[in-house]
Length: 312
Image: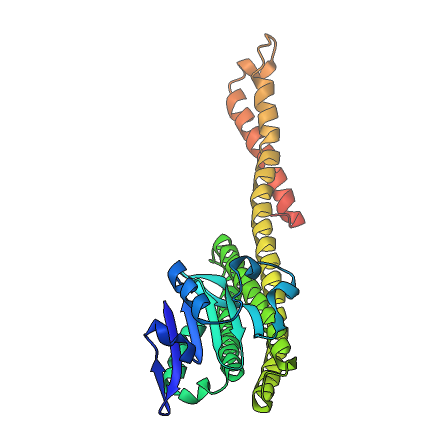
C-alpha cells in the first residue's frame, strides 16, 4: 500500500494519482507489491535500498549518504500476533522528500501517518519528518520498557513471594521478557546509530538537529534502564531455577530417607525369609509379632535420628 502526502493550502493532502508522486513530501510504502515498488522506482530519481542490504550487519551497508540524500535501514519494534518482532524500514531522506519502505505496517509509522494528517507542518522538512518518526519510535520503546518493568514486578512476586506459584510457568514468562527486552535494546542501538548519523549530516536544520540531539539523550537514558531489566530478568531466572532445584532436592531427600528407613526392615524380612531348617523363631508362638515389631522399631529409629539432626 502506498501513502503519499503533500502540503496543499496549509492542509495535508493524500495523493492517490500515481502520476503525481513527485509532488509528495513523504512516500510511505507499507507492504508494497512489486508493481508499487517499481512505481516508486520509476517516479523517484533516487537509488532505493534493496531488501538484501537491510539484512546486512555492517553499518556501512545500512547507513550512508550520497549526492541524492541520506540512506538508512533502521529497525522498528512491533507485535506480530502478540509476539515482539523487529522490522527493518528502508529510508531515503532527500531535501525534497522522505521515502520509507517496509514489508510490514509498523505501528510507529502508522501513528506518524495519523500525526501528519493532523499537523501538515510536519511535512515541511524531510529531515524533520524523519526526526518525528524516530521520536515516535523511541517513545514507543520507552513505553514498552515501562510495560516490561510492570510485568517483571508481577513475575518477581510469583517467583520470590508466592508459595503456590508455578515456577515453570514463571520461567516461560521470564524467557518472553528477555526476548522482548533484547529486541528493544536492538532497536535502541540501531536508532542511536542512525540518529547520530542524521545529526552529523549537513542536511538537518538547526531546530531539527536539536531534536535529534535530544533524542540521543533520551536513548542514552533508556539504555541503562534496559540493562537493569536484563539484570533483573537474569536474577529472577537464577532464583526460579534455584527454587526448582530446592524442590527437586526435597523430593530426592524424601526418597533417600524412605530408602534408608526401610533398609533395616528389609534386611530383617530377608533374614526370616531364608529357608533354613533350624531357625529358633520359626516354631516360637510369638515369632511373627516379634519380627514385625523388630521391623517397625528398625524403621522408626532412623527417622527419629534424621529428625533430631534436622534433616527432615
